[in-house]
Image (cartoon, rainbow, N blue to C red; front, side, top):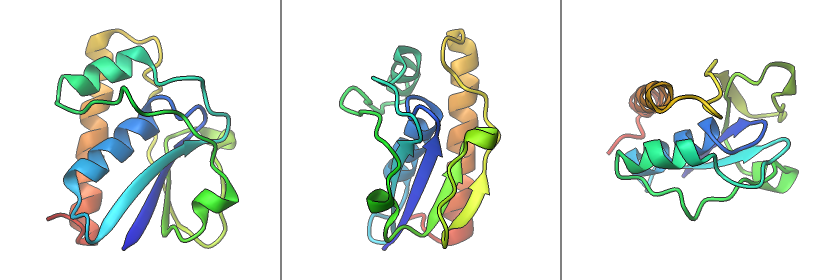
Length: 133
């Protein structure tokens, strides 16, 4: 079982979308995802919850969490979400950065575009790594 951590600063938008898509689309016997942030927000952005709800993914129970050493222990990948110098670094993990715009406060049309970009990137990752069902 491989574990992928999707991380951004506030863990309230992009990384939550990525982990939710990953867990919905991956073969659960092969891989799972968690999301975290370096400075977690208080809640998931409402516009992100709404956009994910449109595609059948309910984030109402999701909560931002801090990226800790304990959380990173045993993970295989760290995928950051374009957070620049604020992106976390965890030694020993494969790493990728997806330069994605923060959806916070954006119009719903833009949030949908970001959501769809996240879903496409997750799909490509699953195919490339052989984690798709």
